[in-house]
Image (tube, rainbow, N blue to C red; front, side):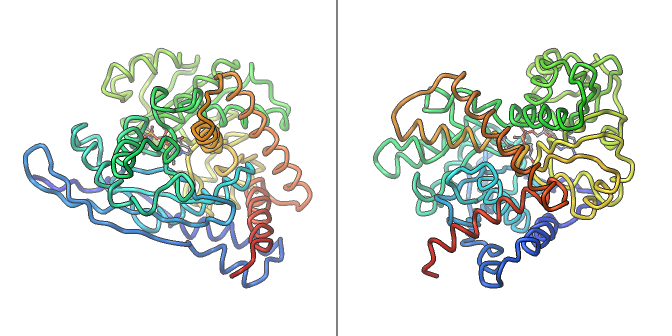
Length: 424
Ligand code: NAD
């Protein structure tokens, strides 16, 4: 069987270095002492496992599974599982640290973690993906746990994969453990409002940013990169609030319509087209990179990391960037974007709706009780809105970007908690 090569990634800056650069700036402003700095920058634990999986043709293929626990200072660690050809330890370490800062920014009692397997689920059958997810779970039985480490979906995984994880974990423990994972299907203890939560948080952040810049949503335009869970839900909710979505994109290319794209039509098209926008006729196909530099009010990168870099940042024309993806902007791009006066709602704030509703799911599982969708939306909207205000105020107080302000808010909270816990 052919070994799948990871897709080439052009101009990739190291995400771990990008994260550390922001961490260092915020730590300096906070005057963090060397001891706390060293504890906060190092991942608490890193697990790397080999996962032999029988493929449909009978061959056994060995995948590498990674789980990095960055911090458990605020509580059990929390973070998604990514199935993607580009998964590597550096990336997972950066994503795990981001989870620590993200949970701290929105003030939920979790530490940060992230997991991943280098594989291409689009080239695998559902049976192969299921066997891979169950193998991954079995090898992480001592890592996962409702009070230890609670996974969730990320790129390439969704509710079905989380159901397999919950089932494999529960079988091994000899009891049903709903709260070991979030992002589950509703019938299996998933929370109403979880599927659209990250996209909804992006929308709430966009509305808050528009208010600051005095932009009327009804007159605003937007481009959304990535049309998966985050991008499609963000696009739909922004459209519902009157924003004209001029361009969307996925792995197959970018699609532009100057009169605005009918997002529900695009979602239905994708659903009937094996999950991609390939051949979408309601818009003109443009090169993927062009979407990022369109003259729109709002740019929502919601696909992957390091797409706005030192090479293309100066061409960006949007007035605000609302980061749906984790780490879409490299550290090299930050200064260019700041000089241009673009307001950036950073990933650890703008895409925290997902982990917030994951937290609600875990709370509901532990209570054995279900909240209505309205209650989930209301509580999540308030958390994102309040966090946005806190980060915005911090950015004004310290005269720094929203991104550095978000790191200041997060690191300050984790550092203070670390001091109170002591004992190291
Ligand atoms: P997904 O797999 O559902 O969707 C990813 C989308 O990006 C797909 O439409 C894919 O075709 C597209 N894509 C991939 N490469 C692309 C490229 N080069 N150009 C344009 N589009 C491309 O994943 P998702 O859950 O929507 O996650 C997207 C991003 O959001 C990731 O960075 C993830 O870490 C982050 N995120 C996700 C959640 C969540 O709840 N799902 C929460 C927080 C952050």
